[in-house]
Length: 472
Ligand code: 2HG
Ligand code: ZN
Image (cartoon, rainbow, N blue to C red; front, side, top):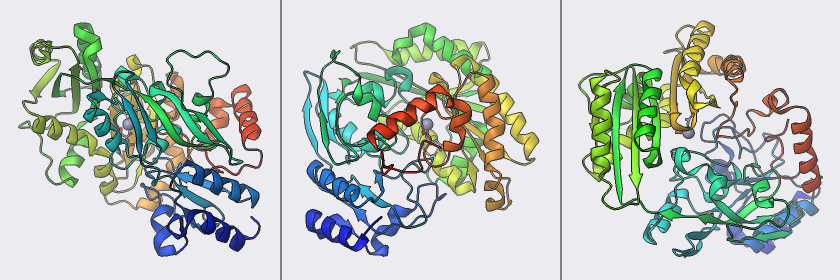
């Protein structure tokens, strides 16, 4: 980068003092990721207030050859928004682009800016009588821009697909500062390459998404949520099959949790309680929902679970009777990441396999990890209904966290060998970020990686957007 002082001066003149943070006390929080894996340094955090300001900031940085790390809620699990340690990269926070520009309940669309937290977006949709069917554990902090840039998945993929399936249009600032306004809201539009999908999932390496048109759905009129204790991942899969056979279209979420995962939540998260007398080896959280009136999902839930209890597929089950109970059951699931963070160092394997292979994945990966490191604590959990399991492993109790993390590649490789054997993916929904580019040649090498590199150099020839992420 040339002339840092000149660049900061020009940025401050354009964005105003509120738009440029340079005091380390102010920039520090932006330099550490949620998992605390990376501790970087930055000369400045830019906080533009609108798309024009983002464009100007990016143009000025490009003119000075300064690299930019775009950042939303900074909740990446793979260091996707982590800044380098050498202090050369500028962070561009989208937080101030926080307006819901428009909601159209007839078109069932929402035009929304990148910095709106996902939860606020869901609430805005709900206020307009619609559903934004994207739900992830970090939704209170994660912002729309980051959620789209990483093509987040989450709990409702089983029914509505991933973030990219909800995107009709995007507005993007390109690496040279040009703005592409692709905020179309059409369901049909065959006019060339589907550029919006190029930016969704590009992890901020091709452009900065500043706004998007999202597809909305009708709000459920009825929701039924149950927590079930099961003896094995195989039983959890069989139960999923039964819900599918009963009414596949009503499955809103189907989440798997291990006994240890639940124990960690009960141990580390105050206020969480298990509605059963004793602990079980595994659990399933199932949510049914429908916009249809008079569907009586509660009875449907009871019918499936009564048969499953009778057949000893399920050993215990509770159906929530109120909104508060629904929230309490979901909390047992949503606090998994925080509980694991408090339990010590952990290695995360965000993997996917065909749904039918989930039990095999869990058995084999558990054996492989326990063989590698006796005392290691396997905590598989997640989105069984779409085949995405977070095969996380927590350090042995009392072990040295840093020594455990030093073996992270070994652990990830052991799990990934099994995932590959089952025709899966090493990154289902968290992306590649800074943690996993080294895996790309083996998994996506040859023509595929070559195409990705050609796209990157066509759009960002100087490699200034989110360097060191995604591509090796
Ligand atoms: C979830 O499903 C998130 O809760 C985070 O994807 C998973 O902590 C994790 O590995
Ligand atoms: Zn997840």
